[in-house]
Amino acid sequence: MKTKSESRSEGKGGHRESYFWPEPPADGMLTITGPEARHISRVMRHEVGSVIGVVDGAGGEHQVELTAVRADRVAGCVLADTKRAREPGHRVAIAQAVLKGDHLAQVCAQATELGVSRVIPFLSARTVGRLSPAKLERLRGVSLAALKSSTRTVLPTIDAPVGFGELANRAREFDQVLVAYEDETGAGLGTALKRDAESVLIVVGPEGGFEPEEIGVLKGAGAVPFSLGPRRLRAETAAIAAVTMALGLLGDLG
Amino acid sequence: MKTKSESRSEGKGGHRESYFWPEPPADGMLTITGPEARHISRVMRHEVGSVIGVVDGAGGEHQVELTAVRADRVAGCVLADTKRAREPGHRVAIAQAVLKGDHLAQVCAQATELGVSRVIPFLSARTVGRLSPAKLERLRGVSLAALKSSTRTVLPTIDAPVGFGELANRAREFDQVLVAYEDETGAGLGTALKRDAESVLIVVGPEGGFEPEEIGVLKGAGAVPFSLGPRRLRAETAAIAAVTMALGLLGDLG
Image (cartoon, rainbow over all chains, first blue to last red; front, top):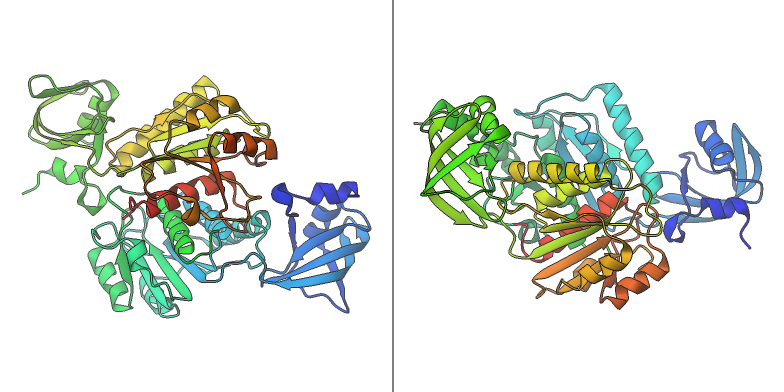
C-alpha cells in the first residue's frame, strides 16, 4: 500500500518527482539541508519511511528511505543507486546567441527537458541584449528546475557567455558542429548530421541572424551549416527544433 | 539600387517581411485599409514605388508595387502571384489540451512558425484552465503574427475548443493520428509515423497527462500512441518536439 506521502511524490506517468542534492552519501546515508530539505518536508510533506529519488546532477540517482525529517534537515539511508538513468546516449549541446527578454531562459528550460548536455551562450555581431551574472544565475536556476521536472539525472552546464572567437574554440571540443543558417538552402539536419557522432554542438544565432563572415569563422572551425527549411523561425524556435531533430535522429527521443 | 523603404522591408536572410490581407485583388489592383495599411505606411514607411509581399493566409502571395500610400489606405498593382510558397508539403496539425497561463499561445506561435495547418484546442479530464472566446481570439492573433514573421502564406486554423468526444470525431479527418503518451514505453515517432500520410494529427495532453481511458477512446478512433523518450516533457515542449519531428521526418523542415 502506498503511504500518503508516497502517493504525493509520484508524478504523472508513475515517475516520482526528483530532488536535487549534489553531495555524495556518507556511509550509506544522505543528508539534505537548506531549501531542498524544506521542499521535501514541508511542501511535498514526506515523512519518515518515505522513499524519495535524489539526483546529484552528475548522473547519480539515489533511492533514499527517509529516517529523519525536519524543516531544515532531511536524512535517510540509500537503498539503491543508478547512474545516468533516463539520459540520452549522446552529448548534444547548444550554443545559442544571447537573446532579448526571456527567450534564452525558455531555450535553457526546454533544451534541458529534451536532454542537452550543455548550453553555451555567446555574443555575435547582431546580438541584441546582454547576459549579466544575475541573469546567468537565473538561467542555471531555470535549468535546475527543468532537470527536476523532467526527471533528468545530469544537470546541463550553462557556460558564462563567450565572444565569437572563443565560441569557435569551444566548437573544437565536439565530434560535429552544426550551425543553423537561414541563407543555407542546401542540406537539412537529417543530411548534415553525422550519425556516428558521440558529441554534437548546434549553433543558433541571434534574432537578426549571422553575418556571412561569422559563418566563415564557424566553417573554419569545422562547422557544417544546415537549413531548417524555407520558413523563418524565431531563434528560440530554431534552437528547440534543431535540438529535437538532432536527439531524435540519434535515437535519443523515444 | 534599393530604395530606403525596400531595404527596410527586407528581413534577415533577404526575405521580405510579409503583410497580411485576406481579400483578393480586383482588376490587378490590391487595396489595403485599416491597421495593416498604417503598419505598411507609417511603421515600415513604404513609399510609392515600393514592392511588398502580401499574403492572403490561404496560400496566395502577391508582389505588389505601391501606387498610393496613405496612413489609412495603401494600394498597388499586382506584379506576380504565387500559391503556397514556403509551405510544407504535408498537413500536420496539433490537437493540444488547453494549458494554464500563456503556454497555449506559445504552442500556437511556434507551431505556426514550424508549419502546422491547424491547431485544435481540447478539454480532457485533467485539463486545468479554460479557453475563453477572448483568449481564443488572442491565440488567432498570435498565430497571425507568427505567419508574418515566418513568411508563411497559409494561416493555420485555430479551432474553438472541443470536448474529448468531438476531438475523437475530428481525428477521423486525418490520414494518421498520433498521441504523445508518456506511459508509452514502445515506439518513438520515427517508428509510429506513416511516411505516406498526407495529413497527420498529433495529440498532446494537458500538464497532468491523459487518463488511461482517454487513450482508449483515441485508440478507438484510430490513434497510435508514441513515446518521446524517458524524460518527462512539459506539454508545450512535447507539442513542439512532436511537431518538429513529424515535419522533419516528412521532409518539410529542410
